[in-house]
Image (cartoon, rainbow, N blue to C red):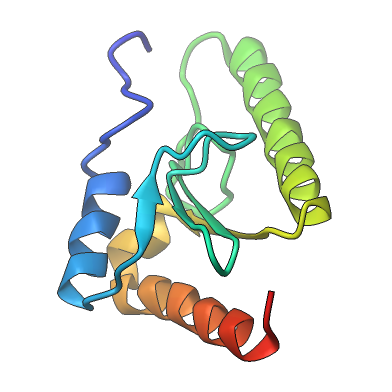
Length: 130
């Protein structure tokens, strides 16, 4: 577990960086000092994007990501992570931020849909105003 990086993960963050650049989506900041440490933020439309690993954040995507040892400890840890994710989303929402969560598996299987989710939110926020 100590070898798992919280920044610069190739299957999540780095993959999304490549997609954003490919689609010429600009204006994002990485690791902006905001509650919950979003992976990407757009300041003007107040959009925070979290790219979550399926195992670490308890996504039930059917990839059979169940731990083999210390099952109870992992279940407790993942449940706390899910609670923290919900709390952070509520905190950011109360401050006017729109939170987008992109799952690792969706980024791998449906990269275009992941980027379109961000694009659509940006367009909606720009049309709607701050």
